[in-house]
Image (cartoon, rainbow, N blue to C red; front, side):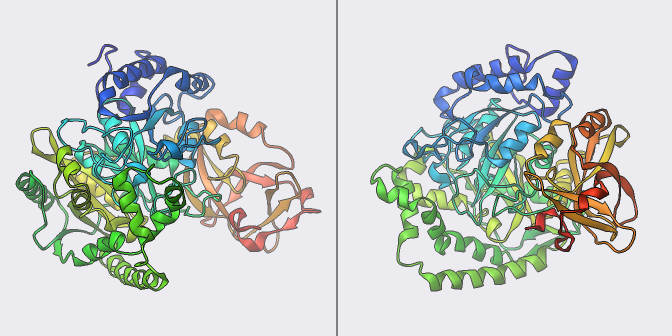
Length: 582
């Protein structure tokens, strides 16, 4: 325990319990975090470190926020390719820095849920690396041992959590950057389905493959974060609606049939750790089947041997070309492979067609199932990476590179130690949208409970939302400020008309018809009963709250429109909902 009786591992549960009992305040937590960051300064964890002057506005905002918000007073770190308003975003390159006016979408959602951003973390430059050594801000040290690499590219975020500088941290993942650092620093690394978390406000590596991820100490904490940030963002071209499903055990666990490739000075120890993990998996009350791993290796090879390296060059190539020698040397070497004439238009389509075939095969295989493999096949010392920066880095991605190309979700979890102070991690994968299967399988492996994320419904009100209060729209913030949480997407009964009201900004009106009508898409949220009256009082005419009949016949409170507003309003019922309207 530290000087403030604060454990080294800061968890959401501990913070909420301590705040609730009055034992500690957010100000005291931040003070301790600043002290820890100063003590660990030589580990190169931060690019913009925790400083009270920068954090104070968020502490001040807590005073006007509901203390029951799911992340009230919880400190978190942000990888420095994700925007935090008013703070430089460097992507690990000082000359690239810019100061964003707005938070990235994921940061905005977390702040609205009461979380406190404490700083921006170190990273492999332009998110190009899996080792944590490719930064002009210094090599981020492993949280447990100075000798070994920390993993990248989200190195600083993982180490910040492991060293007690934050309760959780945002990373990004294109080729494994949200998973490798988790495994090397004894953390959970949660990589959602592509598009499930918006990437607006994130410096792209490969925009079509990039994910925002989170590092935590437990699966349940990762699930809490996921619930706050998951959701469609209409301003993000890569965003998708990927709803959470009820937790369920997979029908089958797949393991690779062929012997795996372990590497590095601890290859034997990693191999034994994997054998122990397999033995534990086989002891679970789940069917286990061994499969040919070849299709996943083929997909992984496409990432750096295929044209996706050109997508990285498309993101930052103009900047690199205009400033010779500015980029970290090995990073520039890797990026420039995307500028070679090797990747012409024909090669792009050839690779896309090959990938589509592999996706079809993996989709068929993993339907209802989960694949388990080591997160890393070994590790390296920092000195070894310095001596051979390319091949050592490539080895770290052997079991991670396939994931986003095949559009899989994944969770990395600790699976014992390969050696003293050398954590070993495994990763569980499934198809896009199947986080519920992976989570339940992880919980089974860890022998952990998986409490439902729903709040006590006797103290909440279900509310049907059909317009600007939906996820990704301007008034979502109001829903969160009143302590609401998204539950699921739904449709009305086929009895409604939606009109576009001539207001600024335009907003929808939902009217129930005596005859005819359409099914209109909406969202169902849970709002604390204590907040409902004050929220309803803010709704301007001609809108109000009434009973909405859903497609399954149930009726819940929701946004309705008074009949007189139909005159002069545009009928947009044919679009099926506000998201699809012009």
